[in-house]
Length: 408
Image 1: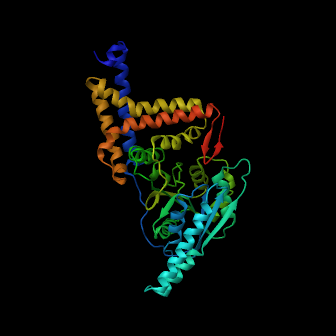
Image 2: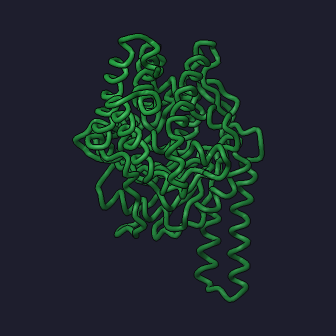
Image 3: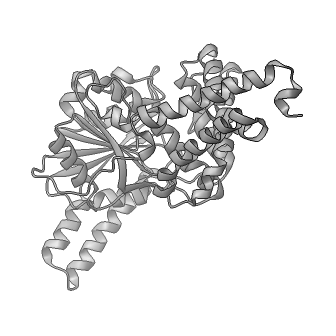
């Protein structure tokens, strides 16, 4: 007797309907959902025809472990135009600002050493000039109604004058040609905003198991092709790297227009796309060095904003979990416990799901065998989403860098 037979005469019929529904959903996802599974496009490494002035704004709070590498990589940008870096130290309780200053001093010292050696005077002057580009703004308070990151961004933007702004996180390291490639993409495509899903850290067991899936699910939720299509209403961005025209930012009312958004990158993309065009792609020129050593670290990363994504709605939570169960769990159940056409539908849906995950696994250099674990990984993300709702209902809200957001 199968599991479906044990629950009564309606069991096999209901299971067959659910299995068929799962298969039809996967056919639609693969054929009519912006080709999300292709894991593209990727920002090309090209030089811009013009080099307008750029200000790089880096909000940072308690980032002593990553800030030196991030600032050092920004100071080392091989960009033909003028640029400067504005680090906004958002009430840090550690030595974030000091480490940033040390990174600038180290680059200046390296330039002096190069000048004394065989390197050209031009190279030495370039290194010294890069070290002088860093400006640090220290914040001591945050107004009510603002998220900490957005308040820091607003203060950095207020201190800038360049027509183009690069908003980047304090845990991102950049290839020397990254800024040039971002500007080239913006100018060549004529878009108002260019954003990238930078390569995320993927070294610990938890990261190897769950980080590629995070990128995969993000692509599924916001298919990049649709984001980049001006005719589509789908809008999204990845907050680690956002290049934006000042005029576009002013058109939407500045960062103040989204000042209380926890999912600020998507909110910014939606606001900009209402009156312009945006680009979202993958990056081979920037990477996050923020570690998620434990499964609990990734759980907290997901649960921090998952219920916010659902607009704190219990109904949307239930509907989302049911839909995810049909997409991810029902095919496995049909494959393991079904018979005949039910099992065939489950097998086909499982095969499609695993096939769709392979390009993202390839991007992160992971074995294709990880695709077999996708239903379990999806179950982890579902549980974290439920955990996000429970935290909200318990009044805990979202918590990040010793700040609470969105408590019930």
